Amino acid sequence: MTLLSIFAATLAVGIGSVWLAAGLMRLGFRGQGGVQTATHVGPQHLLSLAAGALLATAFMHLLPEAFESGAGAEALFSVLLFGLVFFFLLDKAELWHHGHEHHHAGGEPAHGHHAHEHDTRLRSGAWAVLAGDSVHCFGDGILIASAFVADLRLGLVAALAVLAHEVPHHVGDLAVLRASSGNRRMALVKVSLAGAVTPLGGLVGWWLVDRLHEFLPYFLTVASSSFIYVALADLIPQLQKRLTAAETGAQIFWLLVGISLVMGASHLVHATH
Image 1 (cartoon, one colour):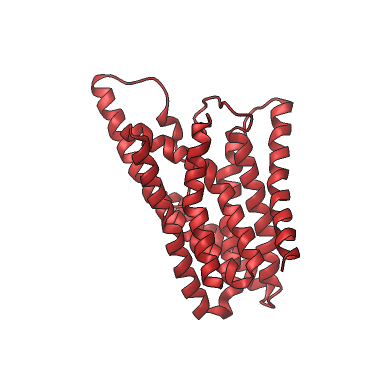
Image 2 (cartoon, rainbow, N blue to C red):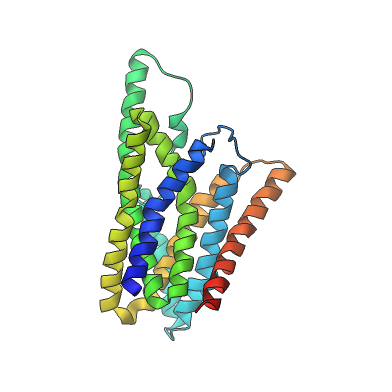
């Protein structure tokens, strides 16, 4: 039952987030490229929602579950600290950071030699996006599996938080790949294949945690460090712009929506079990 739940959730997160992103783009959503959206919910709003969901999952679910296991607080905080440093190092290697330079997908067309350089940068940037996405999705699968092994409710909440984070960034990924190839369908296929690595990570995570069950609290703490790092180092910096009072209020509102979404989902799942 746990393995089936892990596979279903990671499949929904990995591929479902890509198709949801594609649907938003069809409605006029264009990611972080500075293009106005045709919808009322813009890139900043979805990033705020994702940040709230990740932080709420880390601080209100994953970490409390780890500490309730009886593991020493000093050891868990040490894992949290080293986890943050580890994801920083992965970020430096461009394997964990999702703050892709999506603005390359827009802008004025280049000409001549500059056009050739521009196309080369787009193609190399597209492969970098796919490589980074694949590694990130594999890691997401392991983290989601760790949460499911601890508790079904915790796994669903973690999957929801990852889904909220992946959707706005897959919008940017699709924009980069569409600009590099000019083929929307192929861009969707490529990003979907990268997302399909998430279930693979989920299966590996289930196998790993099942054999190292005594280390489950530390796996949950590592998952928390990932969520915290992505929220504070990736998402929130993209929101740190000079905005009007109304725009700032909207950011705060969607941040609270993300937190409330995680809390509401947790209570709903808890009530049905």
